[in-house]
Image (cartoon, rainbow, N blue to C red; front, side, top):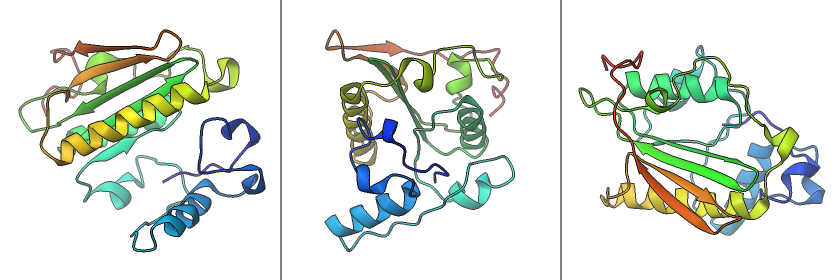
Length: 190
């Protein structure tokens, strides 16, 4: 699910794309290239932005939602939907040299979510990709770690679930931060 088109600034970190893809829809090019690698793929593409109105039609049956969106509003909507519907959520983001990954179980009665860590419902005033950029290797390292965490989840290796994984590509450092539930989280009842 992505409503973006491929831009020149994407090419250093989004390795499915090249200069011949500029101006095309990301979901269409990604499907085409992944199908070329494995024609037995079953990939459904949705070229729209997630909203509170449409999210249920796209991810209600998911075993795991992987959120790599680059805007706060979408992250909040996805987190809320996954918490309320007990869908595991892997949240992954990169800015500059740094990446963050966390996988929430979202089991009923055992609450811990993105809002427990970042309780601001409004978009925080933080540096953005368009102001500070994203180093391609930071995105690569974060993406590889997120991929491994996804594989671990589906193979029942839950050692690093619900730990915030902080990746600093400049220092070649990975830190794991154990997260506790926030009793003041607005989704605490779930």
